[in-house]
Length: 128
Image (cartoon, rainbow, N blue to C red; front, side, top):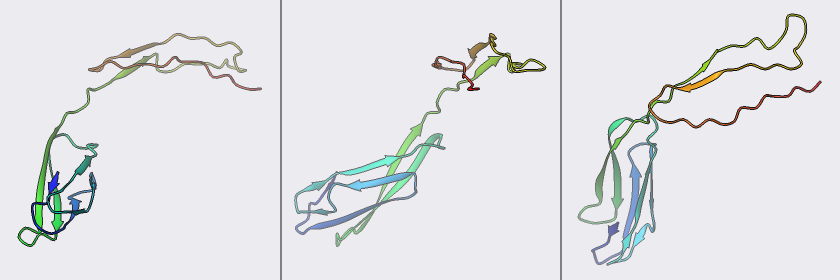
């Protein structure tokens, strides 16, 4: 929240330090004694562990027109999922013509660090 403790309208602009963040104020002009909510979103894609970013506040405050807000966080890496399909190749065509009814068995195994849901696998039907 940004509160206007002065005696005149306070005009505020919030600008993030990089494109990974977005800022939004509920109202850019804050009346004396009132507040405005400052919302910040952060896209953590590509970031790991400790992150520090800035938000630059520019206003018409005669004493402190420019402020810097520090945003700190810790990004946890997602658990690794490793899916193994064995065998990794199948011969579904005969030597001379396309097989009409082909069936084969395979094993899907998750050797990762967390559970991995699988969808039901259905054979594709070809039109002739």
